[in-house]
Image (cartoon, rainbow, N blue to C red; front, side):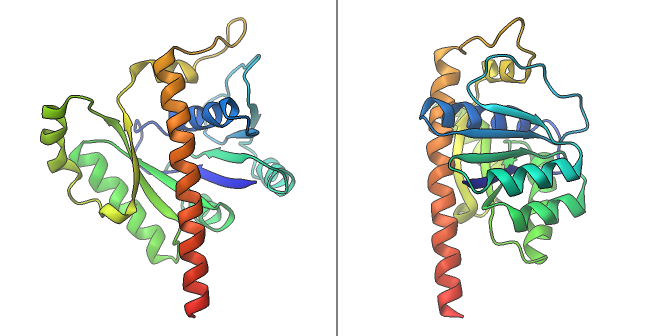
Length: 213
């Protein structure tokens, strides 16, 4: 099993929605997915989702689940809250890939770039950027490029289209989970393959670095 964590000090960048979307995308492709809720907010009430959802706010619970699940197939996904340096250091060591979502906003880019650089200065080499809420309109894309220019291109694993309906994945299942709209399902599948490729690329790069050393 591969471990993937969504991190980032800046709130509102889509860490939780993207975590759910990744889990959903994995499930739609037949890959087991285990979602770890570590945010301070109360966990969702889920019923019928095609992926496992755990309240892992207790560090011991998360450690136990990770040591068990990482021996299996599929994806182990952590939805990480911000401003927890010790936890961030743990996930960069324990997970195969750490994703920091960026949005086309100057403050978001500055805050999350600083976070990425700090993690890398501490030795992390598996931290990557994912551009969220990327405009579908070509003219608007050209406009927002100025806000994303400071993000190293080699660190960007992909772009997630702006899809308001993905927020429904953050809601309680009432009474049971309903299959999301097509656009959310397509986003989820694409995200799964984007992350899968990124995990493999990071592993290849790390392997090459170790051989060179």
